[in-house]
Amino acid sequence: MASGNGILVLYAHPAPQRSRANRLLAEAARDVPGVQVRDLYQTYPDFYIDAAHERKLVEASHLLVFMHPIRWYSMPSLLKEWLDVVFDARWAYERNEGALKGKSFWLVASTGSGIEAYRPGGLHGRPFADFLAPFEQTAALCGMRWIAPLILHGASGLDEDKLQAHVALFRERLSNYAASAPTAAD
Ligand SMILES: Cc1cc2nc3c(=O)[nH]c(=O)nc-3n(C[C@H](O)[C@H](O)[C@H](O)COP(=O)(O)O)c2cc1C
Image (tube, helix red, strand yellow):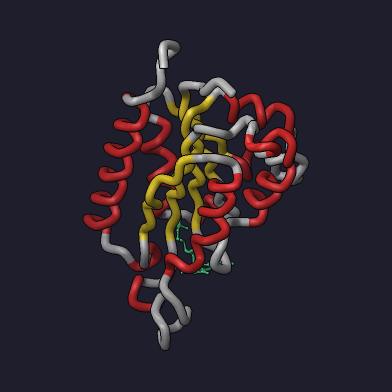
């Protein structure tokens, strides 16, 4: 499957009016040339997803970004629905020839709790990396390249300087990925 050369950001925030961190990240992504930010809760308030259209957008991309607050150790429900209907098995991975093969996957997410809560004996009982397994295996099954996730821990109480530094880091990394998009010759 030929690779597209755009970047598709799936922004999923169930309560965007209350978002501090993800709202700024989504705004930063919108400013980067070659990046399309898809606000899923705005686009599909009724959860009725146009899967064929979404697949075309994914096919035109070389990098798929999931951007969202962590909810119950996972992704928000509309993004999960998006995954369920868009990643049709035959299209996504069957016989290792699926449409996603060779594309990259990047999780950009935030948690309310600080990293210290993610440890044995801590509030969340285990390292945060343990909760990444379903994301990582989804990418692996589809033959996608796994990019180390960018996680903002303790997003709720973070001071403004640290938040702005995180947004700047994200913008820089995203711009680099946009600049290294595959060309027709690749
Ligand atoms: C229903 C719900 C579930 C949540 N689950 C988690 C969780 O599993 N782990 C965690 O650290 N924070 C959890 N949070 C906190 C959010 O991740 C946090 O508020 C968000 O990352 C802050 O980003 P924002 O400023 O863009 O809203 C949850 C919040 C809600 C409302």
